[in-house]
Amino acid sequence: MYEISYPWMFLALLLPFLAYAVLPVYRESKDSIQVPFFQRLVELSGQTPSRGAVVLERLLSQRVWVAFCWLLIVIAMAKPIWIGDLVTNTKSARDLMVAVDLSGSMQATDFLDQNGENIDRLSAVKMVLRDFVSQREHDRLGLIVFGSAAYLQSPFTEDHDTWQILLEESEIGMAGVSTVFGDAIGLAIKIFEHSESDNKVLIVLTDGNDTGSKVPPVDAATVAANKGVTIYTIAIGDPATVGEEAMDIDVMNKIAEVSGGASYQALDREQLAEIYVRIAELEPEEYETLTYRPTYSLHFYPLIIIAGVYCLLYVILAFGLWRSKRGVADV
Image (cartoon, rainbow, N blue to C red):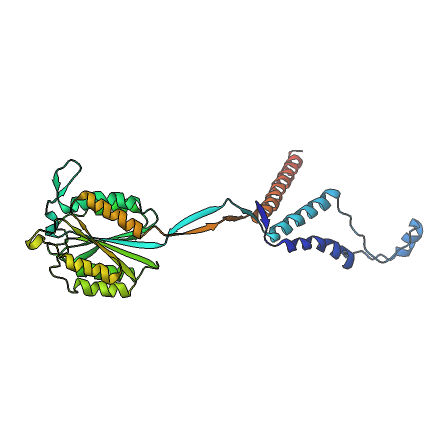
């Protein structure tokens, strides 16, 4: 629909009438020739000389054109706008960071795929994360991978397809063979400091056996809780595993307790999928909607009409003058 930004500008339509009523008539002075026999000319012509000037009358077309131009100028000053259809933008209200363990312990093949074949822990994580991410349409997702060090694989983004690609490109051992669980939490806290979201969630998938963090995982979780970050820990694999591939369930439970999250154990791919469902129930999608109508200013169209007509008249008059001169030259 149309809307006028400054409707009071239409009062300017009365200005020409006010000027006509108040201002004196424009008088144009011209040079004249003084002759010694002026009085004789007056007697012979029978006319009475007088002081004054002739008021030139405009043609009807001139009056109409001037009035039309003034109307278009006033419309332009009133600034008409076109209001478009209602547009609704959905903006995520949550930043969700996923931290994936890429240490050597993730090579353990204690998961079964859909065909019943053994697969490593990381492959199972990737398979289930695809479904989980598809359910987080309005969340801004980030990805941290960690091994001997923690790295930001993807900053927070609403482009989930790119996030999935970066996850698929992550391989076991690319971040080192150790497990710096605490440093991964610390990196997530640092990234969350630049987040404007009030809802900050960190999901950590690991065997839970920290083997070299500068900051102990529980201490890092305490700092995260103070920063408003909720942590969900998921222990991957068989808890009965020993050695480098063993899981520290107590540490993972403590991290979740301190940060106000929850801790889960995934013994197989089906349990891992169920865990994501539980997290989705605990952390339902939150998003903000911004509704507005786009506006497009139309004030320049009346001015374009005036300029276009003037240009057209100029071309027509110039062409007519050129033809008349050419005709005189031919004669």
